[in-house]
Image 1 (cartoon, helix red, strand yellow):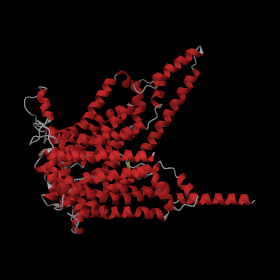
Image 2 (image 1 turned 90 degrees about the vertical axis):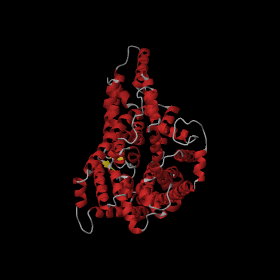
Image 3 (image 1 turned 30 degrees about the vertical axis):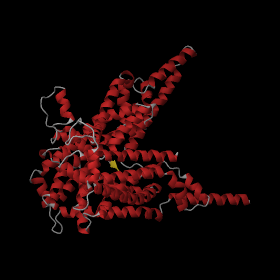
Length: 607
């Protein structure tokens, strides 16, 4: 009887323990509260002030909106911006889907190399890639020289400072945002689905169109949402590569703030852009309420589950058909089944029949992604006093100029200081919020959209809103202002990555530790933290890169204070392009490389 009583008490203790772990509590709210309060104070409040400015508060009026839609061609700029967003999204989809497909169909070391050639440009500074295209598209750039050598033209063609140049740069920068979500979905598909369709009589094309392609729709949807939102809020690349007749809404907003000093019209234009973004998200059903899914299109899981169920039915039918069709002899039947399976489970008909075509396309796409960085790398060692490719000689003079110029070195130090401070603050707030949202997904339904808002809203709108809010708080031109502004986006990245890491965490380990007498803090420190350190490091790296490379918000918040390295680069690109920027760009290329090395080192330690 004593044993029975003890067992009953133990079961009751475990039940109470599991119930406490699964029930939302005040501690979860306290964990997520600092991040929510931070974003509410330094993002939601400035956005509210921006809206009040757009309606002329305290004199409530819609004069700014009326002016936007009726005067000065502002509405035409809006149409041009939306058109550019759809065009860039469509081009990236056409180019990115086959590239993702080629990577997914490859294997071994080739797959790793191809993936790295997509990830490294994705993590490389926006300014570096934009500067590279300025060099390549100029009259003396690589593109025009190639056209002349091939005999396609006798004189340089005007590509730089045209809409074509802006589109080329935008597609290059946005392409990884399309490839990676599609590739992620392709990698998660069941390899048996296409063979099952083939076993039912479908040819390779029909199996691809009816089975494989529908299952990749969630990736296409997520990639399209990301590319469109980023494209309509683009500022740096269109401003650097486009012409005066190709002004987009982000450039118009910046002009109204910095030159025309018409903040009310800038606020109205920013809210129009925000409404376009919200309308696109609602139209495509984006869901940001899940702490585990992050930036995944809503409804994708249900459709994928339905398609997977249908495919599973095909598999069962295929198996039954194989069982019913035995041959005359066991040996002959075995040979036929072996040949049939080999035919079904070949990776892909196109890869088998025309591997050169797939390899050539993948090589061209990856070359397009990596070429600008290679051009900048070579030009940074040029001995020429002006931009020229290929260089007539090699030298380290531009690196020497960088370290000898105090304006460059102080900008580098400022960037490192701001990035480290914002990363530390982002990790402290983001890890607590991610832990709370993962333990209680019901909180994520309400809090996740708020925590992701700083990276969902177009960056130019964020910059204008923070500028309007920080002016009254005396934070313009201060280090604290930059740190607070960069922390907003850093929190979002940390929450997404840590939540994704916690989604694969086995909670039974925590329960086992707590059943042995460990308290919540000890359990987190000794069990949870070591097992999710890879996600924490990854989140910290992304937060650091986000702050170190950010230029749009820094341009609004930095004012006349000490410049960060991207601010200094952007200022020189706009006024005096010289090879020193190539040396700076080459050093910035090391940031994502070092980040990937840090992730690999952390992964090795985790193993």
